[in-house]
Length: 111
Length: 114
Image 1 (cartoon, rainbow over the protein chains, first blue to last red):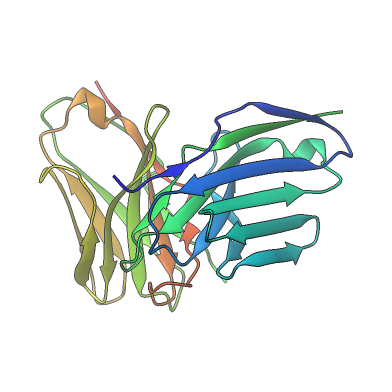
Image 2 (tube, rainbow over the protein chains, first blue to last red):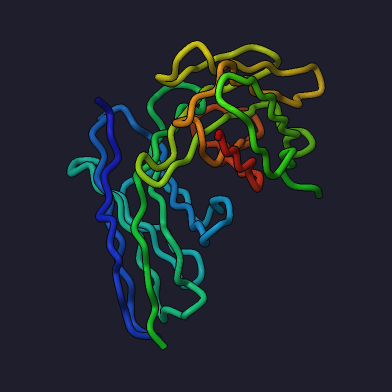
């Protein structure tokens, strides 16, 4: 079973701190990785994609990929209460748009 | 630029009935994927269509089917509804649907089976 695993949380961080969200995947053929943010009752919103080993930064968000360890992470700097949401990690499964999602990590940013 | 549009937003159906959900992708996007989201199972892939052809299918029973029209709009059908089919159904569109192309979700259709 090809899986993407995440800690369900909740992960609680104080406002202004760095939130670190982690994800592991089992399918070694996966090439593309995505982080989605989903607010309660809303649909997932793409916030980051990463395809190569290393770091990718976009504003307060940094995605990190380590294919050797089959590990993806998302760092959120200067966390804000508006960042409180469930963060979904996803990996492609080598087929056209067959993307496998983790069950998500719930992040709570405490003012 | 309009986003992904799903209709209807909410549905209540009775066990044994069938239902059809609609998804209009972002203009120019040719790939439409469908997902089922439940609290216990998270987001599960149903199938993906590209240029009116189903290219990929998840592990769902044959009661779940779909199609895509020449304008890239897609429909998903669930026959003989079961209580366990109650879920949020999401569609996502992407430009070409190949690896490295990001997908954008619609607001979803909340289906309740009673």
